[in-house]
Length: 166
Image (cartoon, rainbow, N blue to C red):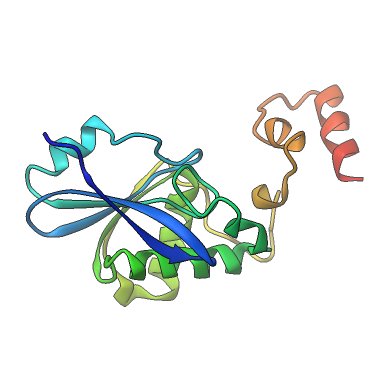
């Protein structure tokens, strides 16, 4: 398959990369944590039957490099993701969301059902619950980030993680 076409849309005040390939009905693919540095082989397979559109979230690989700094909470991220879906001409299309993008597109489907015709989630984070906020991944510093993804629940690890939040 040939290399995808690349364009840019403005979200959070900066350019976000949008990759596109294939022909047929449009389907959006929003990659998970770390974004999508390269076109994925599985998208080539999808592109044999669909026009695959893969926009990059702000702050993720290919996304607005500094625009995410003004996104202070979950609703800001949800709004930016909705803007990205609209700017990439994906409103009303099927959306595939992975990891953190899975959480965001699931929330879009809940808040604005007309924006998503079909929702496909690959290892999504949980839906946001204001009564059980959990750890705000987007507020983690560079040194806190690895600790927030650890599965070690030992007392030593828990103490180390807690010391970063005090």
